[in-house]
Image (cartoon, rainbow, N blue to C red):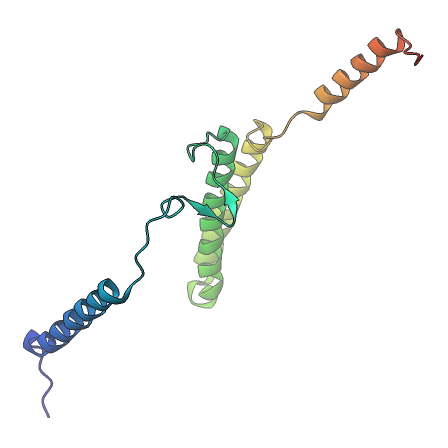
Length: 145
């Protein structure tokens, strides 16, 4: 039996697929529930009543961390691909992956040195403010009467 690359053999699948989609859509329209209550169009978030808007601004540090994650995740994929074909690549592949890893390490050290990975509050500032607060309250002794 000869195999035909003609696309005419594909038309029954398209017709049957379209018929099934139309049949199921029609059945849903005829048999589906119909109700209009005030809570029908409200957003449902796991039982929590939605309050406010979904347009919340996040600090830029979250986006930077996400970008770093994507970059280093792609680098991990490259290293994994190299590890799979290490025998076929030989020494040139080993040298190239060493260069790749050293550049990645230099980028990570640079990001760390400029503070791009520090997105929390500075603990030294918090401790200094706490000590100042303690010094101010020591001068005023509160006595309950």
